[in-house]
Every structure is written in C-alpha cells, then in structure tokens.
Image 1 (cartoon, one colour):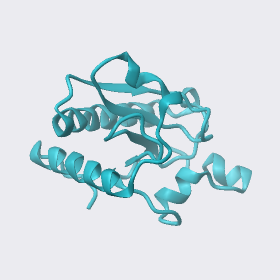
Image 2 (cartoon, rainbow, N blue to C red):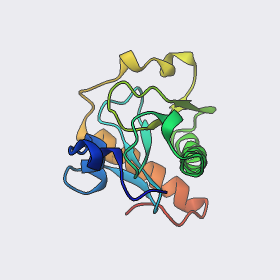
Image 3 (cartoon, rainbow, N blue to C red):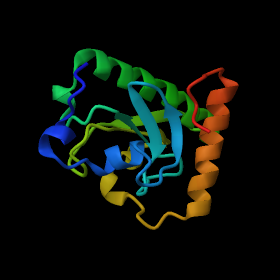
Length: 151
C-alpha cells in the first residue's frame, strides 16, 4: 500500500483520520495495521460500528484490493461480535460514504430491514449507552479469541 494517503494530498485529514490518530476521541473496538473499528456517534442501533481503513481513501472502489479485502474481513469479525453482544439474528452491513470522504463500512446488529436506514440514525445517543455497547462488543470478540480488540 502507498504511504501517501488522499488526506496528505488534499492537505486536510478527514474526521476519521483525526479519530484514528487520537486527535479526536473514539470508542475503538478493533485496531490493526490496516484498519480500525469504532462506534459511530450517530448509531441506527446500539452497537453500530464503523470499520475504517487507515489509508484515507474516499471511495471504497478506489481502495487497494488487499486493503479492501482486509476491511471486509474485519467487518465480518466485528459482525460476529455485534451479533453475540446484542443477541441479534444478523449483522447488517452498508457502505454509503456520503457522510465522510473516507471509506467506511457500517456494521450493526440487525433484526429487520429497518436497521438499514441510516436516515434513522440517533445523533443524540448517550455516552453511557455507547460505552456499554463498546464494552459488550469488545468482550464478545475477546471471547471468540481475537487479538486485535482495542482496550
């Protein structure tokens, strides 16, 4: 993968890069050399997590294939964690990309198709509920033996 990111070319980091770099707070679920996963601040349901490559690439179709494959692998792992943590029958997954110009995959516990409507996101989610959700997902992933679970 190239060491140059779209953010360095544009000269301004995305909000996700600022979260990844620790300039802004984030409730991290997963961290590795290629991507991270953290809770969104506007969840459609408790446990709504974003899987984000460290490379700042706007459109997922422009992400290097190896990086995209890794992001999807982590999205699948996080999906098992959200299903376990919230006793959900499915893990929903979406790639929209209109909110932030940095590739990100939405992963969330799903009980029906209503959870796939990002226009229903709750921008007023409580910090306590988000902390609880992050802890539950991390615990579920640790129970499954994953070693890149964030602290």
